[in-house]
Image 1 (tube, one colour):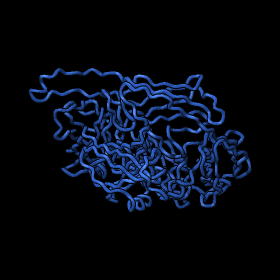
Image 2 (tube, rainbow, N blue to C red):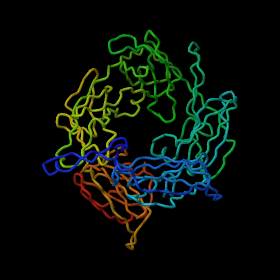
Image 3 (cartoon, rainbow, N blue to C red):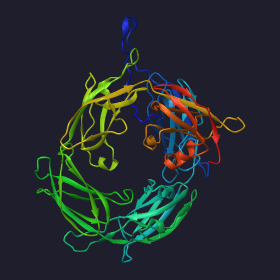
Image 4 (cartoon, one colour):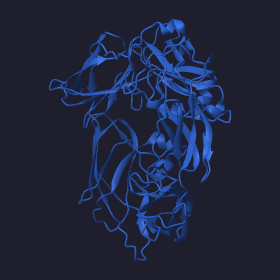
Length: 554
């Protein structure tokens, strides 16, 4: 599946090339879609219709109709029915969500498993895309402070056990907050194994010498997740009275001064410290920059932090400053942060040797300069930029590792390569130094999108209609969940998987019964899979069929 955004606000226009093409009339008419998709949503335990459930259509890969497919949303009526009219041809993932029910995608059999796409053709009526939503688990409990009193405004969340095993401590999107009685309630939790966590800051008096605050605490009451109790939740289960006391920890205070790129105090700025040890479980400490440029951060537990300072005025960018800070339990004073003004990255969009095909309107593209490190995107006010009609562009960027991307691409258009001085920096990005401008970027777009598809059979040669196809590079240096050389595919209603937008290269392909997408991207999984996978080569913009045998006992 292509990683580039597809937007219905941009359309393709026919370009006249050569005397033969010039004889053809220009047709800029955007034709409406002609397909219809319908279904019904009911509760799995009672069969009763669920009204006002949210139904979301998400485009998977390019479409084949007269205009690009688009993401759509709808609500079920009183009888649980929903309908999408005037759909354009394409492959769609259908997802339904409703309050205390488990959110499901069509064809999803297990938690964290992707749904199965539905192939919609021009003029087709796709019926009975139905859902039976199971009720999610419910957890209730109470959080107490170190004195046994209710702790209010504490964030309570669930951490999937599998994420902890992969050392990626993040919550699962289901969370709650304590009220004035310290009570919390989390609903709609999918079945699975979790750790319950609570985090929050104890109100701190800047003038006080008290340096204790709350550490991220795991049920039944420990700051060490290896000592936490794992909770196994089933469909519709209710766990009540989960009570725990927050763990206190000695914290530090950080003081310093922030100046802008010219050495003047940053006015109306904002400073934030985010934990590098457990970014998903530690609320960032933050503070405002005073008129003299000074700031104070409190409640920082021992660990390593990313310190960021940036302008707090919307639409105004006085630059940003970043630094890595280690807290060992003692206060840190006199931190000096100087912001660097945004750099300018300029270049041109090119389309290679493409001719005689539908061309993209350059001025409709959105060019982005995105920090390679996601944490650095916090507070980033550098806006995207639209190229001129001739494809030239200039975008702002903060210092540091930066990736150049293009969005709002119409139809089958995707980013093929980003080059600087003839070197491909699509994946590696460019290193932007403070107060440095970079020119000569070349961003190549293409509508020669590769398409890989195939069917899967079992040991007896029979077609398999439920599986996950995993495609990954033979080059181990290109492994990773965010790699352009990695993708997964689920079968549509005809049992065929399709993966589009992979760059040219040598690949492995394997089909397994089911796999968590996060696990599928891990080096350990890919190393084992490579020994049993099919090898193939994909050319630039090539359409290729690769049929697979289902790998069992994997």
